[in-house]
Image (cartoon, rainbow, N blue to C red; front, side, top):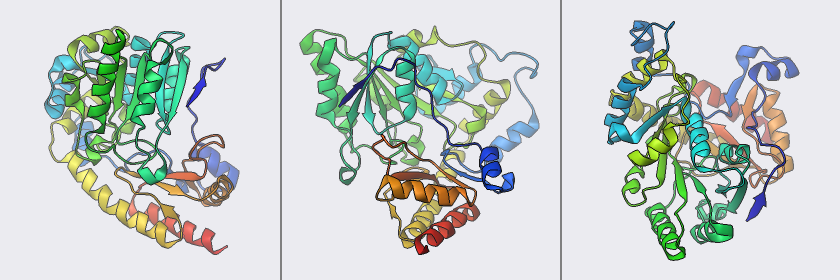
Length: 376
């Protein structure tokens, strides 16, 4: 494991904008296809109808109701929890930021199993805290969490304040083995009791939960300091509307809520979010369509000679063998207006690319590009 305490807070690293890629390679901006953002290509008809109807709780000239009551009620019904167990945020990223403010003190320690979502480390460093990076198991073991290593790190130096988890994990596209998260939480609770210290807060980012049709939110009854994060950005195809939720025991929600800014979620987002959450067909329909296209996309890339890892999500992880080849392939893709997600040289996935499953036309462009690059 590694320990880092940056002199300056970290920031999230994006790929180049579509405009920047178009300008650099002399391409029409409308030809740029984003394979880096893990978004779904089109919103549902339910969402589009809600926007066209324009029936919002208040006019768009006004701030939204401060308790987001209608959106909270719809989310509580969808996730099977009490409204008092939910907190609304402007996407999952605002939820992560609020959790960091609530539970990571300056000079504190937060554990990040790596590789995982980059914002975990960013939020931690912005709090003036130490990121404790705990390597995951190797690719041959599905990049699974190393439970003993996490427990060891959590017990060191007076104990960790928070542990960041993600299931299914971004960017490795796989879920944890059945029962492993429950076992880890039970062991963390037992370790804290034996050492007479407070158990760390555990954040479980379930941004991709709909793709595996499984949530671990009920573990909050076994581990009261669990915060589960959900979003409408992925399976509900509403990334641009920025709607996310924290799901936790009421006492934990109260600790987070004091950091919530007023009105960060728009009246439009509330109306559309409520509509899709109350419709039983939106997420399952998107997941089914993406599952079929993911299989076809992966098969096409494999036939082109690329090593595509198994995926349970709306993106693929491709092993290109070396950082140098990954960089070469990236340049080849960018020249054709195809933007992959890359990883820096020091990252454990520097030899990989992450590719969002897009629509058939865009995916075929990338498959053709992979075939052309293999033939060079």
